[in-house]
Image 1 (spheres, rainbow, N blue to C red):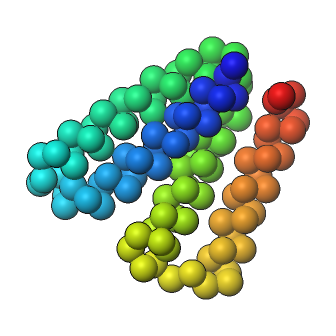
Image 2 (cartoon, rainbow, N blue to C red; image 1 turned 30 degrees about the vertical axis):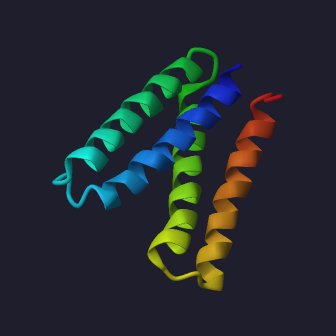
Amino acid sequence: MSWPLLFVAGCFEIAWAIGLAYSDGLSRPVPTLVTGVAMLVSVVFLARAVEELPVGTAYAVWTGIGAVGTASLGIVLFDEPATLARIGFIGLIVVGIVGLHLVSGGP
């Protein structure tokens, strides 16, 4: 059950990272509140995941999911550059996440 919890934690990390952009430096109340709640939920799910997973593995996967999702949504939502190199390096992060999952005995 720890891997699905970790995935959800990573998704909420994406939400709060994107929320930071919409909060305009934490000056807009609703986006700031949503960002704060997403941060809290993300960390709670990460904490639950590390009850069964090694903290180093869980943290690396959590930040990897957040990085891949945030970078991908940055391209879609904020017209950030979608260069071949950028997409390639995002792909390397995905390979790292999958690799950690495989060597950690994930389902």
